[in-house]
Structure formats: structure tokens, C-alpha cells
Length: 528
Image 1: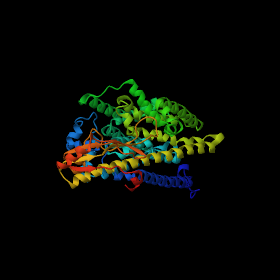
Image 2 (image 1 turned 60 degrees about the horizontal axis):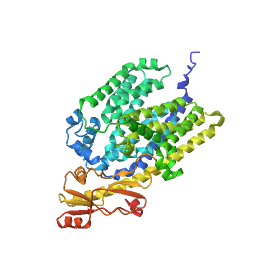
Image 3 (image 1 turned 135 degrees about the horizontal axis):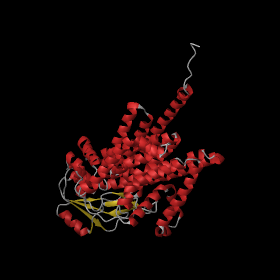
Image 4 (image 1 turned 90 degrees about the vertical axis):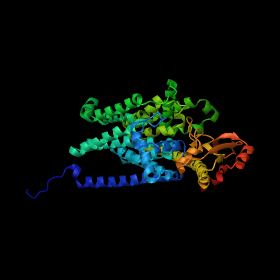
């Protein structure tokens, strides 16, 4: 009896450890695959120039001290994002932020990090396969392209990193005991407090943490709140302090009041994104003219019917609570945009606003094949149907992103042509001809919203681009002479005021340098 070995606990038995090691290796391979997917889809973004509001935002940040960035909103801004703006300035000071590639690389890496955090989170609640599918859908989520490819959209990536990191750390902290568990939870609360400093969506970090704690608790909501109140109260108090400071502590520029119709339209925009594997089919299955007249009815009807069918599928797989939780978390993170932004003024042109909501949407669809595995009467059929939906969704999403990347490269070519001309002729007056303000496909793939690529928007002159890229300003006029030529597969919105050849000749004779941007044709687009 004395040399008899003690029986090992089941969780410490060699077969268990071997399975655990195999699962960890498989998950590490999945994470590597997710990183490769991100680099393949968004690697070309490293060749992008500054687009949309990049020039204005970066110039203002560079001209403001770190202390001022921390203590007050930037002049003319209606939001308070001190941590994001400090990061902008830090990148400029550390890596010479006149090069767009530094910012774009940071955005791509953040997108990859968010996918990895989502995979870690889903693995803990639904397993490795669901984690891989959810994170893959998130990487290729079509409405995320603006957030990853435009520098001034960095706040959306940063706040998503803070929120996902907060939940991952909280999950780890609930399983660890003693000092390690307290340290993990303390770090999660720190992420919750920092989130609003990146973007206003982060003001809901405490609420998100409360909802997550209740959702993950099996002891009832009262017990969950009592057990975690010492951690949740500081997060909620910090969010409330930020909210009070934002609303009453700073003067903000006036804007049009948001109406009930605006909020309903914003909710419809979110519904289109939630049901995006199905709403994507509307523009191919329905008559274009009819869809243009009835886009709202088509989107809402498709979202309701398709969402109900998906929820029934989840119910058959005994994971209805899990599916509803992902939708609830997605809606919660999009709530500030629904409540405070006018649809036609901002949300319609800003699919990047959906980026923080994307993890919940991706998880909702990534869990679908797992529901099939629990359907006893048709396990393999259910899994195959779920995988078919995901494969079709990924294929269409990748095609969507490839088109936007092509448009982004064309826009960047135009931007950098102006920069190159100014660099060759420093401080000479510059006339830019045929420059695009935006580029878009002739027909969008989704009924609601605008999904083109911005170059230099009409409300910003090219002098701002030159200061952001070269560090100096010089006189710049932007002219449009005649209608833009037919581009075949995309449309150009011209930048500048209408002019004629006589005006251009007069500018040339007066010593102005002419930068004529001829749009590249379809056959040339892949050589960029």
C-alpha cells in the first residue's frame, strides 16, 4: 500500500493534458491563420495615402501639446478623445508621421489584434471551431473597411481593442484565484476606464461589463452583481464621470438635433449589418429600381425574417441564449450612434461606425455551424448548412474588400500625384485638375448607405494634404474641366470648382504649376 501511486484528478490525467496540449496547438495555428488573413486582405492598405479627414485631424493634433490634448477637446471637434489624439501625436513624433504607412500598419495590426481577442473570447464560451469562424468573419466584415483603411478612423479600432481586451481579461480573472485573479480584473477595469478616451462608444464599457457578468453567470443576476459590485462600480463611476465631462464640461459646436426618424434609420442600418449574409443578396435578386424605392422595407423585412430563421437554427442547437447575447452586445456597442447621430448627416457615409458592433455580429454567424452539431435529427445537415452560409458570406465579403482596396489605391494614386508635384515644386502655386473627391462603384452591394472610398473631400483643400505629407502649405487651386470620363467600373466625384481651358491656360501663364490627374483606366488598376 505504501508504494501505491495516488490517483490523479481527472483534469490532471495524462490523456486530459494531451488533449489540452493538442487543442492549444490547434488554436495557435488558427491564430496564425487569422493573422495571415488580415495581412492578405489589408496588406495593400500600406500603400494608401492620407484619405478623408486624415489631413485635418493629424495637422490639428501636431499643432497641439500633449497636455492640451489630454485636458480638452480639439477646437471644432464635438467629441473628446484624448488617448487617441495623444497616440496620433506620439506616432508622428516617434516615426515621422508624415508617412501614411506608419499609421496604416498600426491600423492593420490593431485589426489583427481585435480578431485574436475575439477568437480568445469565443473559444471560452463556444469552443475552438466557433472561435475560428467568428474571428475570420470579423476580419472580412465588409462594413469594417473604412475603419481599417482610413487613419482618422483609428478611434473605432482602439475602442474595440479596449472593450474586447476588457472582456478577455475579466474572463481570465474570474477563473484565477488570489493575487493573479485580482490583477487580471484590475487590468480589465483599467481597460474599461480607458475605453472612452479612445472613442465615445467606450462610455458603455462599464455597462457592457455588467451585461457580460450577468450573461456569463449561472447563479442569477442578483448574485452576479453582488459578487462583482466592488469591481463594476468603479467602472460605471468612471464612465459616468466621462459622460458628465463630455456633455457639461466642454463647449461643443452645435449640430442638427437628432430626430426619432434618424434613430429608426440608424437602427435599420444596424439591422442591415446584422443580417448582412442575407441583405447582401437583395441587390442581386431584386430589381434595382424597385429596391431603390423600397430599400427600407426590403432591408427590415429581410433582417426580421432572416434573423428569425437564424435564431430558430440556434434554438435547435440549444444555444439561443448565446446567440441572443451576441446580438445584444452588438446592439449595445452601436447604441451611441443610434441615439446621437443623424443618419443622412453621418451614419449613411460612415460604415466604420459599425466596427465596434462587428465582433457580436461575426460571432452570431460564426456560431451557426455549432448549432447544427447539437441538432440530433440532422446534425451533419445543420452543420453543412451553417458552413455554406459562412463560405458564401466570406467569399462575398472578400470580393467587397478587394473592390474597395482597388478604389483606395486609385484614390491614393491621385493624392500622391499632388504630393509629388508639390515636392518637385516647393512653395510654388499649384493648380490641381481632375482630382477625385471620392470614388464609388456604379451599384452598391447593400441597399442602405454609401460604400465608396474618399480621397480628398470637397470641404478640405489640397493644401491640408500637403501640410500633412510634406510639412508645409502652398497655394493650391482645384479645378474641374468638363465632365469626368467614363471609368467603366467606377464613378468619380470631382474635387474643386468648375473651370475651363482658358482659365487653366491663364494660370499656367501666371506661373502656376499644373498637376493634371488623369484617372487610370480599368486595364491599369492592377499595376498600382
